[in-house]
Image (cartoon, rainbow, N blue to C red; front, side, top):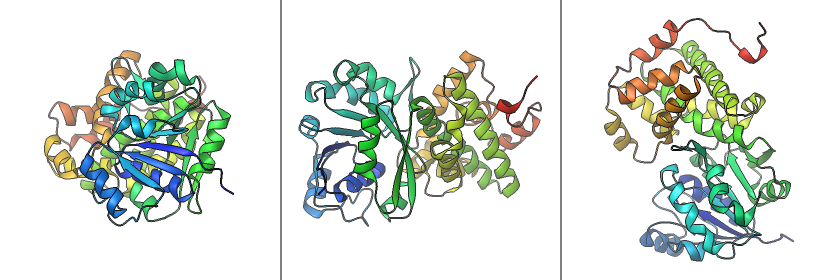
Amino acid sequence: MTDIKQVAVLGGGSFGTVLANLAASNGHEVRLWVRDADQALRINSEGVNTSYHPELQLSENISASEDLGGVVNGAEYILVATPSSIFNKIIPRLEPHIDSSAFVISCTKGIQPDPFSTMTEIISKHLGHVIGDKVGALSGPNLAKEIADQKIAGTVIASSNKTLSSEIKTILSSNTFKVFSSVDTQGVELAGALKNIYAICCGIAHAKNVGENALGFMVTRSMAEMSRFAVAKGANPITFLGLAGMGDLMATCTSKLSRNFQLGELLGADMTLKEAKASVGQVAEGARTLEVVYLEAKKMDVNMPMVDSLYKILYEDSSSDELIQDLLDHPNEVDVEFTYKD
């Protein structure tokens, strides 16, 4: 018999909804926090999140509410799937409602500035004195629409806490959704956040009809930049060969289901950033992450030519035509620098 867990999912967007449904479909009691009382009422009465997945019939084990405290109280596992822009505001609000037995897992792919922080670092900063090491990050090639359609997908749960990793595998795994584990939380989180930048680059390139060879070139150079930056931050470069790295990069940089790829395509068609964001509709984390990574790379003196080029396009009115040329004009560098010895 299933050991029924009390699960809270914070964020009623695309990914939060499918995570809630995965856990609830496995028999767990799931409370879904949404910011809008009307949205909560519609989910509870119709059994559907019409704002994001009108095609997905939600499990009866899900109840939605706009009351954050009510959702979190008594939850054994708290999955945070809010946009990164509000993550830092939501996490401190959890403290009065959780106890030391709770596990908190970031399902948000983003980075906060001032100071540069991953999502789990924000969790630990505000809640570490309560929950200790019961912190993790979930990341991988997880296009929410495909998960909702029960297409095969895999993800990574990264944590130093073995109980957390083991339990999340049980809570979320299904016949079509497989959960792997990692202890490199820093690498998994940075991979998930950074790839959104390069999905925008690949969307621009696709709009320019540069060809498949060029896209392969861009994806591999993206991987080189991502891993270079992450290693400078203390991550393991081998993590980037896995689901959270290459897997997520490939899915996001080639799929029209990716909001960041869509944003890039629109920029490549000469829309302004404001126009492109409005057209995509949902949050595309890559543009925000780009600003943070650009400044941090400069501070650490990490070479990231694609980040530099995209920053000029998005924030300094450079033409999107210059993206590929900037990459070609950059001084030659070794292919896989971690195998290179002086």
